[in-house]
Image (cartoon, one colour):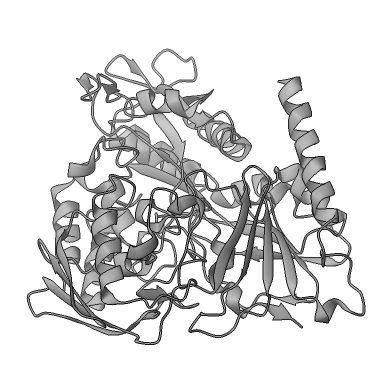
Amino acid sequence: MAKKRIWQLAAGLAIMALVAGLSGCAGPKSDNTAAKNELVLAINAEPEGGFDPTTGWGRYGSPLFQSTLLKRDKDLQIVNDLATGYQVSADGLTWTVKIRKDVEFSDGKPLTAADIQYTYETAQKSNSVVDLTIMKSVEAADDDIVVFTLKKPQSAFVDVLTGIGIVPKHAHGKDYAQHPIGSGPFKFVQWDKGQQLIVEANPKYYGPKPGFSKLTFLFLSEDAAYAAAKAGKADVVAIPPAFSKQPVAGMRLIAVDSVDNRGIVFPTVKAGGKTENGYPVGNDVTADGAIRKAINAAVDRKALVDGILEGQGTPAYTICDRLPWWNADAVINDNDLNGAKRILAEAGWKDADGDGILEKDSRKAEFTLIYPASDKTRQALAIAAADMVKPLGINMRTEGKSWDDIKTLMHSNAVMLGWGSHTPLEMYYVYYSKNSGIDYYNPGYYSNPAVDAYMDKALAATGQDEANGYWKKAQWDGSTGLSAKGDAPWAWLVNLKHCYLVRENLDIGQPKIEPHGHGWPITDNIAEWHWK
């Protein structure tokens, strides 16, 4: 472990030396800063799979190199990007999208509906995280008209149109992910794997001209990125909450709200089952809804935000807090030990032998909460949550495991996981009964026919307002739902604020609520950035 740490530090120092040698490199604020037209950023991890939208690049933020048909503005409303408008048939099965005629890829070739057809057909066949199972066909009806035909109505298909960057049919080969071509605000120049990515402004871009001609993305550990910020060698740096209280000369902290959430998913069925791969399913303790509801009531979410996230976050109550389809009525009163104790007592849980752990039907109220051993924030949240429910008589043991181990254990143990996206489809993936046991979707095998029915109606709706109404009812309809007020298959704990150190005279506009941090969500509006 020591050797690995030494290697990481050496690599970080080597990259910082490289940055120091860059022409036009960022430095402390000076009189000629306003004239500098290059930025250096260390904002998140390197994308292992490269930059191909047909296999998932850009799903958690702007694809940077590519354009999408639609996008969400700072208020999360749907607006046009490549599209000039779209129409949905009365039966919800046909989506006709008209696109701009003035768009070229960065290599000068025109972008037409044929490229869109190719992109979506390729993504559908990719067997990746891009889910296009709902799409029956896509056709280029004209150079500027593309027609999508769905297998059944799906209101959330609009979110699919915001999430897939368009690739060029003529230049999408096996090496595309390593050398992307697109019609977005920036074009690819150079990728030194494990070190840096260099991009330049795309002169063919149809939108507002970016304020910077060159961007250099550094792939650094958190410690090395923070050191680069302190040394004045980076203009925008993503930092963990633990660093947020430490001022850096020449830079200011920007904490962006997100739905990048963390919570505990519980097995909701009794033990005894197995997955197709032979992994155990179910847990007799967490299958009791009273246990799950009591934990939700007892945890002090604000204390978790203040103590573990250094205040850089918000309490989380659902998978979609503050998004347009969020049901505010699903919020519960937490930090309520007395209320939690009543829930358990009414369900028949009591400490019969005086050992401090509740029992019911000769079964102890104890189980294991697993967290990824590599994630210190999730570890701290797990340990703190376990301490908070201990006074109830619930023994929630915490164990750190590798992701490979978690895949085999997550159907029979509670797990600290995280989600967060700008589409209500995520709610469908995580809670719909038929998604039980598929990848990380619904690992607890949660099932409620009423919730499924609401989500079916939401997907079949022909208008967004109607759809959002059903998504809200799926969370809580006054008597049942997937939230903590209902079946409580999760105990959502916190929404992270994404923390960035930003050069003090760099204006990055108004970031919108960011999704899960796997992508580079801060770059969503990067074409608008400029020096003050």
